[in-house]
Length: 449
Image 1 (tube, rainbow, N blue to C red):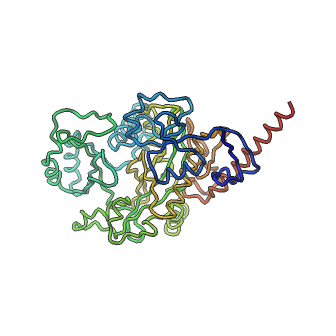
Image 2 (image 1 turned 180 degrees about the vertical axis):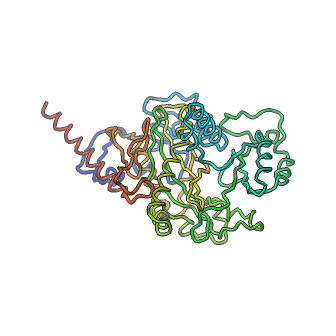
Image 3 (image 1 turned 90 degrees about the vertical axis):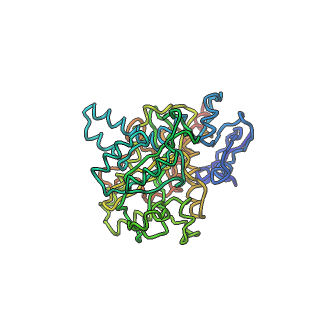
């Protein structure tokens, strides 16, 4: 048996450390598996959970996407077991399927006469799915001949295979390299994209944001997080934090710089090859710092409106896929959103990641991600600490449960939870006191019987 203390143990989680009172309850240890030996592994060990190498005898498994596609359907889950992906997560996190599902949901709203709501789902730059929509792309070129486009292979990540173009002749060269030749159709609902040479490598082609918001002359995007514990009803926890990822090269739209990926792509996998890469800071600012900087430049009202737009944008793709996602009580998922802001302070969704990078690049990055993961594990609640009505858990706030919840009061000048200066430790301390008080009440009630 395993003694869990809400206060006073060396391996206590933040929730346990700050809780009032000392509650000991005998439970068997949580047995975990992890496909990753990075911050994820550290977060699991920090909770006092016990690692197992058993393929079946585990309580919690932080698996990779390959395990889901290869094993989920044939695995016999016990009622208590949890994994960190939904079966068809790719409906949201594959670039082409995200666009398809947003379009489908938008069309349904239009058929229902909800025109304004349908327009609110236009959250991605103009996008074409290639090779299927190549003729539509050609027509768009004729209408807007001077537009710059970005090509992204749907089956790759970390910037691999991405390139910019502005002439159809550049696409013609790409078409002729054999990637489009195929002998059989590719299943559009298959998790793993076919990579054999005789299959076409599907791409999304998006209008490139040529006027991104710059800080210090450099392009950046935002990596933000949401945790979904159910799609029926849709239950979404928004993380108040996140960070901006900066290019280490001053931004320019001059023709000679079009091929410089270190200028145009901000993910660390690309930026670490830049000559100016900052090993100490990793080219990142916290969302809180970004928000404060923007307030000094644009004013509190405009920036608060921007944060609210981003918060609402993060819900849109989840709502769009909620009817097609296979809900399962064994599943939850932590999503990483990539969002860019243009010079008019309009946010655009670039993609949603089912396996956002949780490897830390700096000590500050590690501190943020270890707290993020610990809060996710508290939300999943393998230890059965929670009462079920909690709305603020560490850095997360319950934002949606079958409908919007926890909307900011009308008198509050801050319209969104994103980037707010609310201490994670304070939230956990409040939650710990609440749980300790509930435990003492239950104990007292039991003694009085």
